Length: 184
Image (cartoon, rainbow, N blue to C red; front, side, top):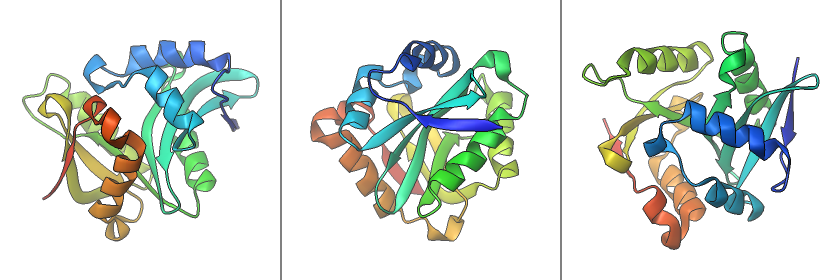
């Protein structure tokens, strides 16, 4: 049974978060951890640690407003992969944000991408956990494309997602993650 604990911005969990963050996400997909902490401190997002009893197994970072919760990062320590923690965490996230539209994005399947088999597995994982493509994708840094996924495909409004990200990034911080939303 996992437990989700909101992480204070000065928590000792950040050493573990930083290690897993750098191990799991490619450099071009990471934002500065200091920036993520700053936005969490401002109430625009939250870091949450995932525990199995007393054992720290991963974290997630969500950006949210009153309507949408966007899972920006979800990472399980590679030592604990394939033990059901990812699915259990998604279930906990859905419960935590039950009054919001829960969304996430994942790299688009691309036959010429070096990690295409990983992209396929990742999308299938989210589909198996109740998410589906919304018909929208983002183009981000380095021209990388990400499919926007949600549990309630028909409820996704790209303008609401754009507004959420605009509030999160602010004009001053938009250089961290330039993106645009495209309809398929």
